[in-house]
Image (spheres, rainbow, N blue to C red):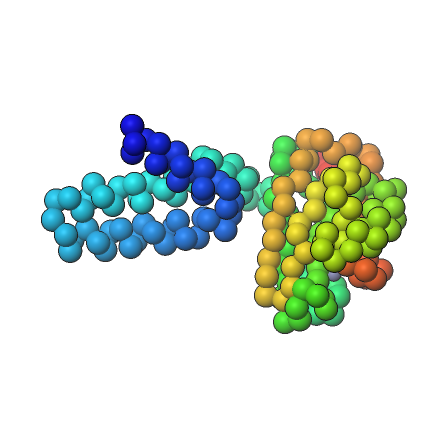
Length: 197
Ligand code: ZN
């Protein structure tokens, strides 16, 4: 029973950490394998919980793991205040898409922070205005803004962030926009997002 509970605790801890937990968990498996030959028969048993950890993590965090490749979108951004695309098209067959923003620049978040915010095109200006008022500590987004369909956290150079987009909840025929909510950036860092068959 104690072992069972500790596994659940481990799974909860992994899910709480989300994707950032995935890499350490993956790394734990080879380490456990290395430990096995060194010790006696007790080692394989001791190692097994660690080896199973990645699987438990995948179940607990359906986020990235269950999104198929065709439902993943990667957008690059840089120190020149640009996204590398002006249009995102999501397949309607994807109930959920995983949007990943990478910042290939070197400047820190405070000076050249980027995020990706998705809203209806008609809501963009209002979300930006309220986001600017919310300030840097709020990643320039109003807390609980219901107009926001999805938003990554704000990142600086060398970082990346992902967010799930509930494609099934998007309205076909409605124009959506994506943009960076860092003050002033949306003039250049913006584009359209649509769902297509
Ligand atoms: Zn930005």
